[in-house]
Length: 150
Image (cartoon, rainbow, N blue to C red; front, side, top):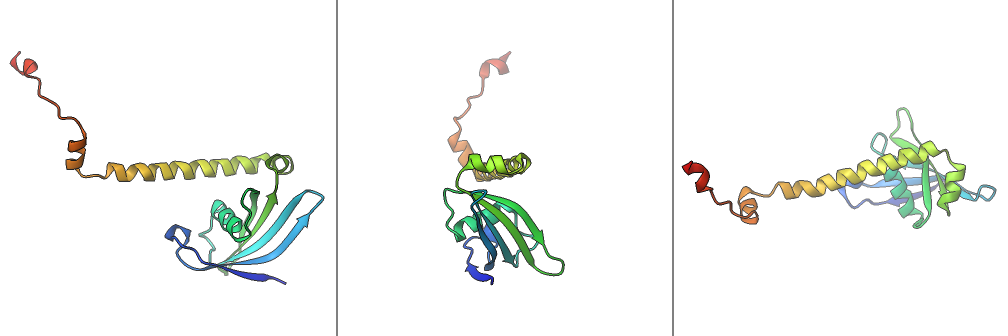
């Protein structure tokens, strides 16, 4: 029986509106030492990215300090629902043994792009300062009279 959990997002980057996470399955796989979660994200079809889904799952199920791996995000035709499958490991070394290394390399690429975009966003406001402030910050350059007289 699915359990509905409401999550209220605070920031516009977190979609700016209410999203519902509905748990489909929550299995503790003792043989592989992992927890397998399958959840529906209502109203996020076409808008949800894997890293954002991992953040939402981590906050919702209080999985801080654990390794959450998004295995699959599947949209449904004609419905605004995304179904996500996640593996939760206690140890990153064990996760790397069990899960295909390609998945980890893709996650690292996504994290690197996200960090690069955030760094660019941090630098952009500094570049948008008015020219008067830049002139005040930069030391005044004195014209060289020797070059002009020659």
